[in-house]
Amino acid sequence: MTALQGASSVWLQERNPTVKVVVVTLLSLVVMFLTDPVTVSVVLAVTLGVVTWGGGVPMRTLAIVLLPFVGFGVGVFIVNAVTRPGEVILTCGTLTATREGVHMGVALALRTLIIGALTVAFLASTPPRDLMVSLQQHARLSPRFAAALMAGHRILDSMPHHWSTIRAAHAVRAPRNRAGKPRFTITDFGRCAFALLVTSIRSSERVALALEVRGLTTGKRTVWKPVALTRTDVAFAITTLLGCAVIIIVGTTVSHLL
Image (cartoon, rainbow, N blue to C red; front, side, top):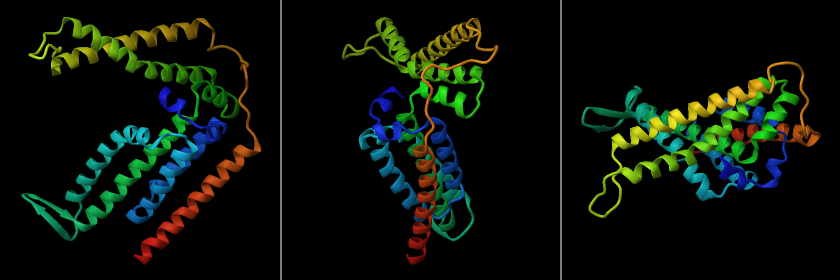
């Protein structure tokens, strides 16, 4: 997450975090109703372009971050292709793929990538501190929950470093292979994962205690360096939603012409 924020450009980072939360949520809901592969493909192409340009995320970084979404999308495609009834277009042993299943599977898989790209753009352009303050100011979120969100973000952000430390500690005692490198088996992976889980839980307990001691559960609180909400943010939200509607119309038109 930190690496993504470092790659972010100024344009999208200047927009209000609460406005971006609303925009991303609405766009994700709209995308959930799209079932035409051509329309979804057009929306995905535009989304990737906006994330690369507006979010400042390089294509290589974006491709790496989207790999889990690609894997999930492939699974969704396969399940729909072989389980939905319709005209059979491919048979492989006991499995049969239908035209309707492939049609819907492609749409659902591409929808997954769109939501993933929107999430990447949001994370790349939104510092945790600004998000917490904006949610308190403009979404009227309780300081308890806002501080908990930021603390959870920080813990997730530190997990890769903790994982590397735990792996290095296990590598010191691990048996060596013929090349002299430490072996890392499934059992070792489980031990490291358990150690990471315990470390994260203990860190969460310490953070929760610190928040309680600081009195975040009582009274009205002020914020340092408030986050601005300007007309530009409102224009950004309206323009983005209208642009999405235009893109969907264009995609639907292209689909009918093909």
